[in-house]
Amino acid sequence: MDGADAQPGQPAAALGDLVMVDLTEAERHLLARGLMEWGGPAHSTEALAVAMGFEGVEDFYAQAGPLHASIRAEAPLSRRDWRRVLIATEVVFASDIFGSGCDWSTTTGLSDEETIFLLRAVQRKLARSANVHNP
Image (tube, rainbow, N blue to C red; front, side, top):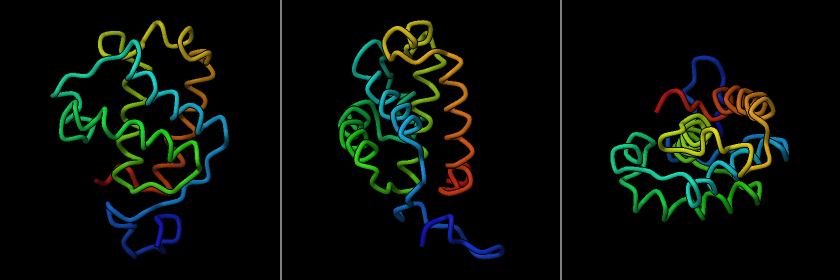
């Protein structure tokens, strides 16, 4: 069962259940770029990686590639993975300390305005379909 199929009063998908989210190509591109930025100008600390839902930096970098590939392949992800991908993208876009920040538009080709528009759409879809606000 995915979160989109849950009826009122019924539990959403378990954290490890795979959930297909209907994202546009542009929305998938945003999330994929968000993950790719961590291998470029962005850098994580142990504490930040844990806050994003990973076991640590090593785990984050080990999982970023497979998550990127799954997003590009339009594959379902677990609720946990959708949550982690969203948080990683939010941080890498907004933070000039840990993420791409002011360099985002240069390194991704996405303007800040376009990114905010896409990010808000993704946030709404993931909240509704993957129940990412309830870990």
